[in-house]
Length: 151
Image (cartoon, rainbow, N blue to C red; front, top):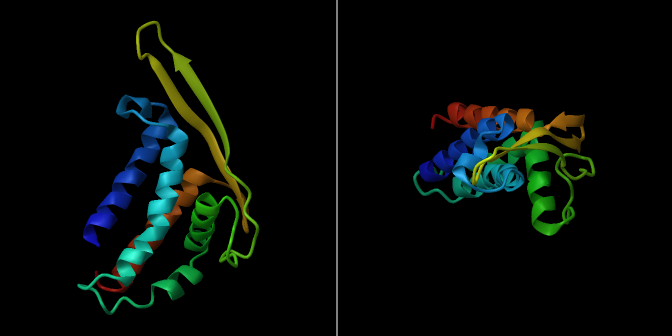
């Protein structure tokens, strides 16, 4: 489970360079990285549930159900996986798709392009919100969960 927590932190750490437009130095697609964060974030719960070193952490579904950010994360993940929400929504709303606005800056040398996600928004039960802020809130919720459970 610790590896998965580190993987989530690594993916979260990529979001700031994506927003600032310096991410392409690492290669990859900025939109995919944002999607990957929410998938990894939600599926950390599976590692918690099946972790032999922490069998007492059986309250994870209850925690997610009571966390607005992680409920929204669950619905984002489900929608990304199935193209639509296939189960009952945890966040009590039909989530829209990500609304992304990006800027590409081209420089006069090979490979000299920087892309930044100027805006990344999603409509949730709380209205329209910034995906980067939602990601930070999800990380804070996971940290709270592990602190409350002594991990």
